[in-house]
Structures are given as C-alpha cells and as structure tokens.
Length: 201
Image (cartoon, rainbow, N blue to C red):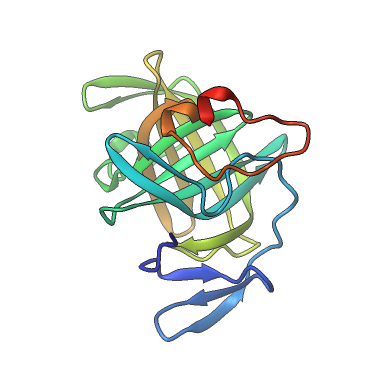
C-alpha cells in the first residue's frame, strides 16, 4: 500500500521529486546510500489496533552517523513516523500544538526538561543534521541541501519527543520507543547473514 494522498513522491529510478498537485518536477532527491535495515517500502504491520504499510523514507546524516525515518501509512488515513537508529525504534506522530512551547522557541541544550502531557522528558541529544535523501511517498520534498537542528527528548518510561528546526520553522513529534516485534511486521527485507527472529515471523 502506498500513501497516494501524500503531496510528494520520489521516483525510484531517477530520484526526481514530483509534486502531485500538477505533477510538477520540484528537483532531485539525493541518491540514498546503501543501508542495512530490515524495513523497506511495503513492509506492513500493526500497532495500537491499526494496520499500516511503510510508504516512504527519509534518511538523515550527521557527523557521527545516520538514521532512517519511515513514514507509516495507516488504513484509517492517518500517518506516523518510525525512527530507526542503531537498532532502536521510535514511533512518533506530529504534535503541532507543541511547536509553540516556550522552551522550544530558543536554543535547546542537553539536559533541558520539557513537560509533555504531564510527563517530564529531558533533552538527551542536540545535533546538526543533513538530509541524505528520500524515497517513496512523502509529505514534503527531500532536497539534498536540506539541513536542520535535531533534538531528541526522552524519559525513563520510554517516552520520546523529536524536535526538528530549519529555516522554515519548527516541527515536533511525540511518541515512544518500541521493539520491532511490537509492530507485528510483515514483508521485512531479506539481509544476507541475518535470520528473521522467530518473534517477527
């Protein structure tokens, strides 16, 4: 299942980014570097009582590594993001209401605390990142020169918050850490030397 309602799509063959409104060519996405991940476009699953399919991906890089953000398209028409970094997964949804929080309007430092729905989360990581490319159906274009500040908040209960700030403004996503098995995944990528764990079959 692809997310046909998304305003942008990246051609799998030439990396051209197409704006669906008028089918306009809005430029080229960077060619995604090789990446070992069990997730791929078309991977399915279920979480919180709803089924989803992976419709798109954005890959971000920074001075010491990179990570994936997978767009999950749910059968009820909603979307969430699945962040994947070093074998850890975050299930996140956009929280536009938090984008005006006073703490997030200025510089954020590691250790800063933020109250989200009665839970205190602490900034654990602040870094400058660059878009390494995108694929599939996405809610925004993924130009190769796109840079931003990325901040991760977390707490001991497994809650997570991601703040992303670029020249256009601020976006905030909240959710929780999950295990891959929690998503009941199907159609995982076959990786040489890796056997799908029994819990994921």
